[in-house]
Image 1 (cartoon, rainbow over the protein chains, first blue to last red):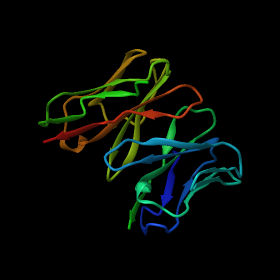
Image 2 (cartoon, rainbow over the protein chains, first blue to last red):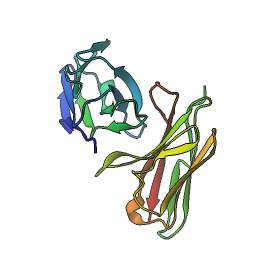
Image 3 (cartoon, each protein chain N blue to C red):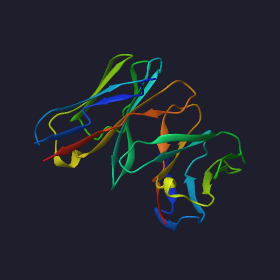
Image 4 (cartoon, each protein chain N blue to C red):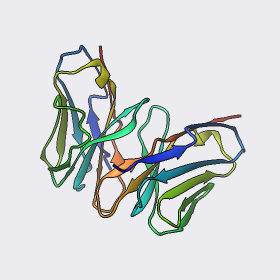
Length: 111
Length: 112
């Protein structure tokens, strides 16, 4: 079945440093979504990418979808303590309703 | 607007007992998903429904788990009998076709 892996599993940065998490799917995706889960909370939708090579920005967050639609990345510029949490990518195959969530990257930010 | 509502928020019970988790999706959403989250296995999809019909239950661990959606505004996930390895956070999510999923706050289940 489809597998979605993320690296790194965990990253600890100082506030102001940049952060990137990478997402790789074993199969080609029709779209990819990113979610953020704060400690003790539930996953919250951030963004959806659909087109090959697509790049989207939300303030300090930049999301990319690979040309082959099998990988994606999330880059945070100048991290803040409010960025703490686990970031998940989640892929959809074809017209399926079923999202396959990645393994997640836990981000810790300290002053 | 009310989000996805799950109950109970926390459940602690002894192994062998029946556990029922409940979910009320966002009104108008036509797909509902049950997930389980653990440190070891991450976020796993257990089952999902489209228009109240179960579509894919391949993630349900074993026959002890069952899920129903009797109408568009209610779903249950039942574990009978429960075992300590079922301890996890169980999330329900709903969505409208083509839109992202909205998650509930989850049920933190501990089986002693």
